[in-house]
Amino acid sequence: MEETARDAADRLEARLAAARAQRAALLRSTESLRAARGLSVDDDEHDPEGSTLSLDHAQQRALLASAERTVAELVAARQRLVEGTYGRCEACGGAIPAGRLVALPEARRCVPCLTVRAAR
Ligand SMILES: [Zn+2]
Image 1 (cartoon, rainbow, N blue to C red):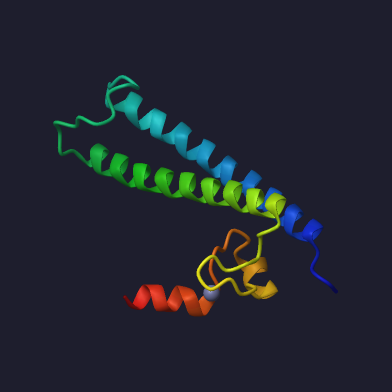
Image 2: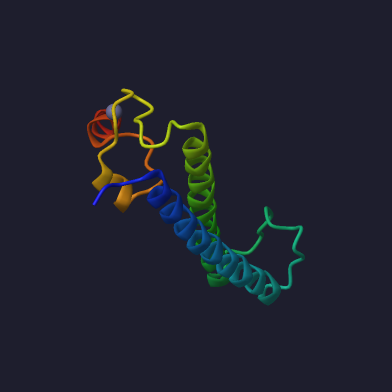
């Protein structure tokens, strides 16, 4: 079975839909946490209380930030697919193995390049 650009596009779309759904769910629960604390939607930086609710809120924000990164990475990957650079390692220019792209469609680097970077 050969890996085609069509397969990659389908996979990216599916992941993107899932990531957007997750982000939307997190946004909703973040909103209800804010409502529970009686804060306006605009006031998200100032938190005078060190309550359990604000801890939940911090975790919620971290999850939301991570979901937003995933969405952004997937959108960027889709753009690379359009430009014809998808599946190419941005560090060494080599091909990222298909297995890695199946596991992580938004991968920008091959595993050896990731390892080198992490070791620094
Ligand atoms: Zn590489």
